[in-house]
Image 1: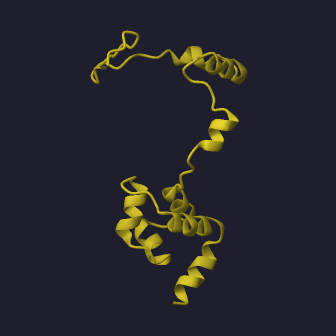
Image 2 (image 1 turned 90 degrees about the vertical axis):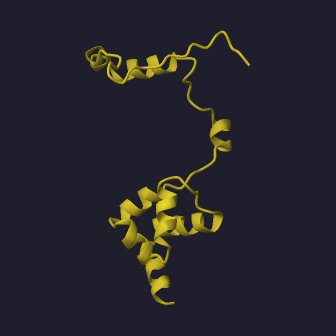
Image 3 (image 1 turned 180 degrees about the vertical axis):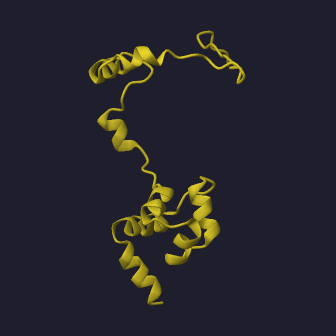
Length: 119
């Protein structure tokens, strides 16, 4: 299907477009916000759209908050290292049970550590 209102542009990595950031630096936060809202293709999500949005667990954020490597995170919480890597690199999303575990790790990591150590 062809759409005559779409223009495709292939950028040359050796010659990227130039941006005048000094003009942006002169704007106030309110002016930046108004400019963003004036773009019809970049409108903020409505409350209804946000309610329908799929929530994604950020495994890397949870691990980094713990201050440990992938290897240590996997060991500490009884998870296969490759699974943690797959989650963080987006090759595989956590299943619903893993999402619950990750949320508990976020909220109460020491409780999960105690539970894993008790096995």
